[in-house]
Length: 304
Image (cartoon, rainbow, N blue to C red):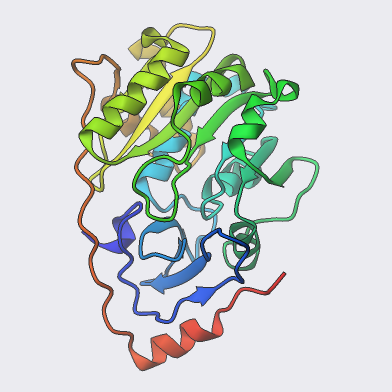
């Protein structure tokens, strides 16, 4: 397993010490490393929280991040304009840039850690807020429970892991019910789940309890153990022929492996649900090469 293919796997970066943002209370440091033309975001551990190919900053580099866009399969591509997207967790801003800059959709992001926001502006090409983009420093749980936000999103992407990447930071049934409420009728949610089999099954059951068993589907896990769950509100899952046609449209219009998504997606059932691979053991980072270490040391995020 290599860092370039990993989602939340140890970064084998030659850059040490890593670039650091300044501390903000008890929240972990946001750090940056680079390897083979890819820049990685960490939260004070080797575990990868996001990635960006430096020469293609708007490309969705990680496989699980690409699958987080699979909500597009459940929306009519001809009626995509104006779709309101909400992201809980900024990561390395890959989804945010794709929705805002590539799809040109209204995009709202809720991120708890101010360092992540600053380092994404400095090193991951996160644009400033404008008429289509709003990045909020705040608590995702509080945001979705706010009655003012009921029915305010058409597409919801949930990727909320702490710095140890052990389990979702928000993962109870009440949270997923609040996610259901924040979606408008016809809305779709994608959730990144990562961890042990029991952890995945428990999370999937909570999502199904909030959305209904018939409104949940799962991808087969990536090679790194990330399983993306889709849940939707107010409609039935389209027939396979419709999904295939939409996938063809998506793959033609944008750099998305949508044709593959249809083959990897299946309806969720407790006794048949996909069980992701166990979390791989952390690997030690190699010693830094002098030139790489010097390069990394110069990459310090600006203090607030």
